[in-house]
Length: 111
Image 1 (cartoon, rainbow, N blue to C red):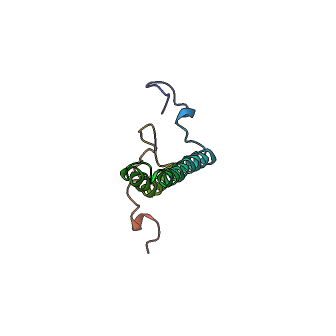
Image 2: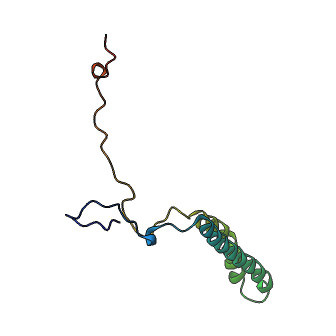
Image 3: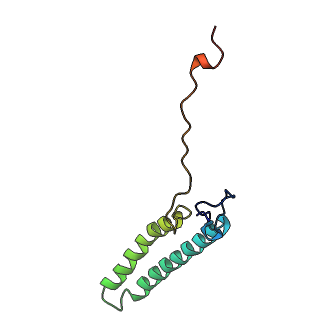
């Protein structure tokens, strides 16, 4: 975002630090922690399904086993969805028109 005003003298464009992306190392660490938590929940689902198998209706351990089966796919999708996301929509580049290419006879290479 620019802080220039109309009619003000041309000054260098100032960028807000809040629009800077999260550092790559922090982003990677955050995604790894989230993935490990999800895999921990998966292990708990497997253990709970094994411990509850003969003590509760069979539907409960089956639901836990289905959750433990589906969770890795969800965890991988969430872990790989990292730096592409932006909290603030906006234009991150300015389009410029290049203009027409010079004609061959204007280049001075004519005979």
